[in-house]
Image (cartoon, rainbow, N blue to C red):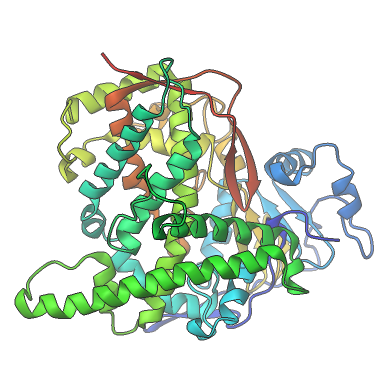
Length: 513
C-alpha cells in the first residue's frame, strides 16, 4: 500500500552513522543501551506484517491532509511519547513535550540526520550535471555538513541579509500596487491572492538566488516568458517533491510527478547556471576596477574555495522553490491573523506609524530593528499556525528518555506544533497574543523548545533571517497602506510535509484614512 503521509516515509540515510566532523573537532553521540527494566513505549497495537495500518486508516480522525489532528489524538490517548509502527517504514516515535524535544535535539546535534526528500536526491543523481550530489535539502551526513559549513556563515550573516532590504521593501510595495489594481470597490481581490503572494515570495528569494528581480509581478508578462517559466518550474518542483514523498511509487517507475520534478529541475538549473556564470565573469571584471567593493551574498559563495560552481547552483535552486513556498504560506497566515484580530492590527499600525510614518522611501535597517511588535506578531503566528507539524531526527544510536529506550534507526518526530498549543506551556494557547513574546514576558516565561518553527541547532532553517526580513517588510508596508478584514470561515490548511493554506480567501483591503 502507498505511504499515507510524508512524515512516515523517511528512509535510513546512507553514510556516517554516529560521527560527524565539525572543523577539527569530532562529535560522537553517546550510546545508551537498553536496560532489562526499560518500559515499553505506548502506542496503537502493532499487528504482524501490517503494524498499525488498519487501526490508523479505520480511525475516523485520520486524514492524511490533516495529520496533525491524528497525532494530537494519539498524544492525548497514549501520553507525551508514542510509538508507531508502519509496515516497510522506520519505527516512529512522537514526542510532544519541550524537555523531551530538547533531549533528542541535543542528543542528535552532533549528527542531525533527517532523511526524506529522497526523490529529489534521486532526480539529481540521474542528471550528470549534479555529479551524484543531492544538495543541502536532500543530503545527510558528511556531504550535508560540507555544504552547510561553507554556506551558513554567509547566508545567515545579518549584514548580508540587510543588503537586500531596500529591494525586498520595493517588492512588497509592488505587490501592494497589484492588490490596489485588482481589488473591487468592496476591497475584495478579483484575482487569486495566493498566486500574487507566491509571485511576491519568488521575487524576494530571487534577489538572493539570482541577484536580481525575476519580474513575474508584471501583469503584462506573456505566459511563455522566461520569468513565468521559472515561476511555474519553482511551483511544480515543490509540488512534485511533495507528491513523491507521499506515494513513493517513483521508486518503482518514473511517475508523472517524478518526471515533472525532473523537468522543473532542468529549467531552474539552466536559469541558475547561466545567471551564476554571468555573475562570476562580472566579479572578475569589476574587481579589476574596484577591488574594495562589497560583494553580494551569491558573489561571496561563488568565491568560496571549498564550494564548486555547481555546489552554489544547487544551493540556489534549493532556495528558490523552498523559499517561495514557505514564505508565501507564512505571509498568508500573517495577513489572515492580522485581519482576524483588528486590535492587534491597530497596534502594528501604531508601531509602523511611529517608526516609518507615511514615507515610501526604502525602509532602513535601523527602522527594521525598531519594529519589535511586528517581530512578536511573527513569532506568535508561527506558534498559532506553525509552518509544519514538527521536526524529525533519525537516531544514530540508542537514547534513554523517561525510562523508555528509543532505538538507533528510529525516526523521532518532535511535535513542536503540539507543544505550542499546550496550555501547560502557554497561557491561553488558543488565543493570538503577540505580547507573550515581548521581552518582559507578560504571560510567563517560554520554554526555548516549546515553539520551533525553524528547527533548532546546526540544522536550523538556513533561510530563517531571509524569511523574517521578507515578512517584516510585507506586514509593515501592508498595514501602512491598508486596514485588513476577513469575511468568512476560518482559514483552512492541509499538511503535506508542510502546512499549505487552502482557499477560498476572504480578505478585504481598505485604504487607511
